[in-house]
Amino acid sequence: MKALFSSDELQKKFEADGYVQIPLLTQAEVYELMTEYKAVSEAHEKINIPYITTSHSNNAELIHHVDAVLQKVIAPAVDKYLKNYNLLFGNYLVKMPGNGSETMPHQDITFVDESQYASVNIWVALQDTNEENGCMYFLKGSHNLMPTLRPTHDYPWVYSNVIDDIKRRSEKYPAKAGDAFIFNHAVIHGSYPNNTNLPRIAAVIAGYHSDAPLLHYYLPVGESNKVEKYSMTKEAYLHFKKGQPPAKGVLLGEINYDFYQIDKKEFKLLLRNNSNRNSILNSVSDFFKKLI
Image (tube, rainbow, N blue to C red):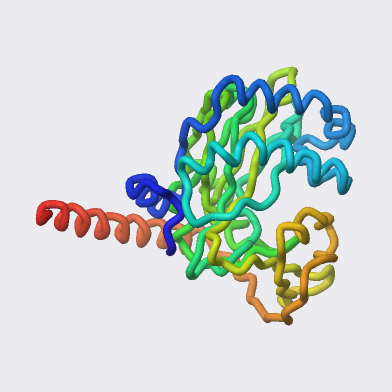
């Protein structure tokens, strides 16, 4: 994998765990983004679903505006941590109070050739988050369990049969306002329900290695394994509408993909093998450190 982080230590942690937690924004920058959110809160919250992203609006003007607001504040801060990267699009993330607001364990869609490159989400807490209002949780190292292709929109997820096991093994991560998680799109993650009486506001910007061709995979409704592969740009993603193929993407062709689903026994074996792999890598790393 080509490195994304300027710090070797953060890069190593990212490769092993699939995510890092960092102090990204100042309180003044958090205040600026929360003030900007208030101006567009009605446009978000009228979507009236438990977990809202700006892109759910399918409103091109709103999507472009929010992206510009988030890029202006977040991009300079990210530049202190990442190298050789491009940023994609930004969204506000609104977890409404009440039932249905939990984000179940999942992996994000595939943006790049993950055999060579990493793509990431930069998830920023704009309020203090905890288990009560819906903080993040991650299954450490799960991006390394097995390669997966993750198209839009509905497909049989490889881990659908082991969701309860994933939730039991995941680690929760409260965050202070301004903290960020930079995580691999392939790492399994989710967030707890919002059991308070106020919306929980966060922001996210996607990013990817600057050498990587940007891609999108789309599984048409009614198809079981014939996936359309598109070449993409940031503009194509900004115009992307949920439930539809990318209107501004360039169709590269179709691929046949077997959406295999593992069982509990296979899942335990994957976890064991990954744990052994990490133990071996750490031992090798410690050995070479002694030689330096």
